[in-house]
Amino acid sequence: MDFQIPNFLPASAELFQAGVIVALLLVISFCRRATGAAVAYWVSLVTLLALATYHIATIDAVDFTFGKMFFDDPVGDVIKCAACLCVALALIYGRRYLRDRDLDSPEYYLIIMLATLGICVLVSAGSLITVYLGLELLSLSSYALVAVDRDSVRSTEAAMKYFVLGALASGLLLYGMSMIYGATQTLDIVDIARALSASNPGPEINRTVLLFGLVFLVAGLAFKLGVVPFHMWIPDVYEGAPTAVTLFIASAPKLAAFAMAYRLLVIGMWDLSEYWQRMLLIVGVASIVLGNVTAIAQTNLKRMLAYSGISHMGFMVLGLVCGRMAGVHNWGGYNYNAYSSSLFYALTYAVTALATFGVILLLSRQGFESERIEDFKGLNKRSSWWAGMMAILMFSMAGIPFFVGFFAKFYILHTLISAGYLWVAVVAVLASLVGAFYYLRVVKVMFFDEATDLSPIGGSTCVKGILSFNSLLIAALGLFPDVLMHICAVLVGASL
Image (cartoon, rainbow, N blue to C red):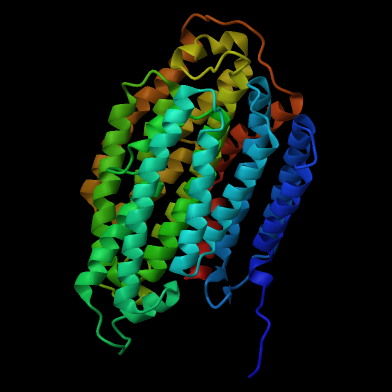
């Protein structure tokens, strides 16, 4: 019997990352807390930047390893690169915040690296087993991060809510996966797609079991995306977690959730799209309406951004709804513009969320969180530059021309209208107009209200420079959106 050594190259980045985590765990065991935190920070930062460079430099055709359980494709490479950069920026923006609150520990960076590894595994999952492995690695790490401030009752309560609801969602997802396996007799995502294909003369599949499994699968995905009706954890976790942790949860895991939906539904459940698209249509519209309406009543900025994130994920989900072209029922019926629009939305939202929470962290100081809208009163008098940066971010999230948030919504609306969902597009536009109120309220508070705090803004010059570049990138992408959109379209076309 011939023994063949598996091709580890497609998973080399993840294997390297796992090795760094093990080595880092050994090193910090022999260091004092302050020294270990510094070592863990710099090792994590350098590793993440190196991984991001590697992923973007090795974009190639689709390649499998570990018996189709792990595969590497252009979409996955770009999402992993973006996720690594998001986590690296989260570490840079949040370090001063953690130091001021005595939360800067080596364990924090180790858990962040484990969560990032879970994101990368989830993005490249080629099997239901790998999907669950990556998801649980990310989820368990996230629960620990939310509770990293053990002396805070609010953080502990948020972590418990997150854990209980997350365990329920993981159970639903696992139950759905078991049903799909029972119906198709395979765990590989590509093989599931082949088993469901109408052109495949395979054994007859129990459609009842399969559709029940699909319902549970979509429910689990909806929780991870944070869309209605599985959104209950989002506001409490955003508000209760330390802002440095909220920054992480609001950015990189959203990319992983998109990749998870893309792998399971678009690639694996393509021939059941008429069913899961209806479910996503309902949760997408409900998320946009509820998220924008509820955010109006919020006075806590982190909680407002949580409901805002629910509405943004609703927009991203609607892009997946338009994936099947009308009247076409085969693999050639992919509507690449729909999926590239969703990818564009996920990438730009992650970048915008990073900068927004980065500004909140910058204005925070020891003993002061700067998380209420009233804390931004008169910011223009304290610093015109940072008031301007925050205004750019609010305008982009509101979808005001000509910032990248406007084009992200425009592309989704265009695909909805092209797919015949005119009424959905109208509802989304009206809900976005409602949402513009609470974004512009922040701008009004910064520029037209009297300042209640005139203390100098802290932070190093390096962090301020990176955060300024991050914010200005939102405006630059708004001037040249076609460049990123074209890249997304090419990536999706190469992966399907």
